[in-house]
Image 1 (cartoon, rainbow, N blue to C red):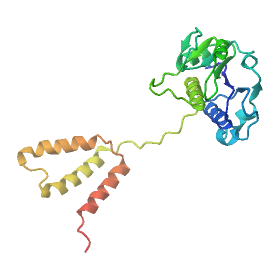
Image 2 (cartoon, helix red, strand yellow; image 1 turned 60 degrees about the vertical axis):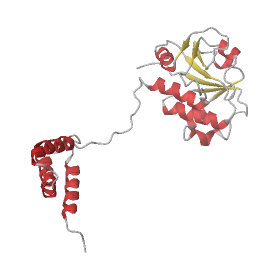
Image 3 (cartoon, rainbow, N blue to C red; image 1 turned 180 degrees about the vertical axis):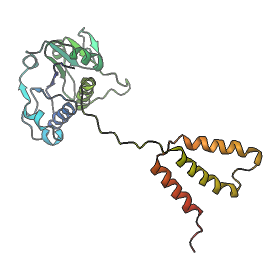
Image 4 (tube, rainbow, N blue to C red; image 1 turned 90 degrees about the vertical axis):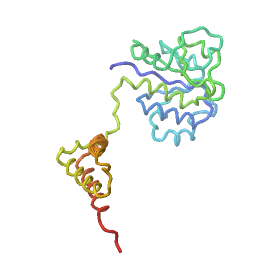
Length: 239
């Protein structure tokens, strides 16, 4: 999918650590353009680097603006993230719906996040065309800055062809003959111990045991290991 990645705008961020964590969340999901509006402790901030955990390129290219209006001046679509509408009547979307629109937008979009303690104020929200609200537990609506950025960045990444973590190569199930060898070994050990008694229930018990064991779809290494377990259990205890 070809689309214009949104710019992440942090308005009056208070802690360098949170800026670093937000940059880390961005880069995890393929976003690289970060803009800061009047960061409380100035910029650059030495506390941001360690928290970015390697997302130094995002921090190095971060742009700083005095006002939100200046930060989004070149953006045709501005989305404000807030849990409260703050008296401003605007469309309200979930992150999923918002980034779906961003993926199809013909011009630059920005997603705006407010200060850690108070969030965006009414004047900030008024600059946006649309509000993004993350569905959250109403009894505990505390979402920190980096978490909010991560949710939106993750939703952005869904249609993208990001590299997936490698899946563990699974061995195919062993041939039936190998399973039968294990099953025969097991039942041979159980018979003299009275496991299949009474005789009238022996066929049903054997069938149930087989059904239970076939669900595991054992590969040849697993069968070999389990047969080794059975062989060990069959040995006489050491003196």
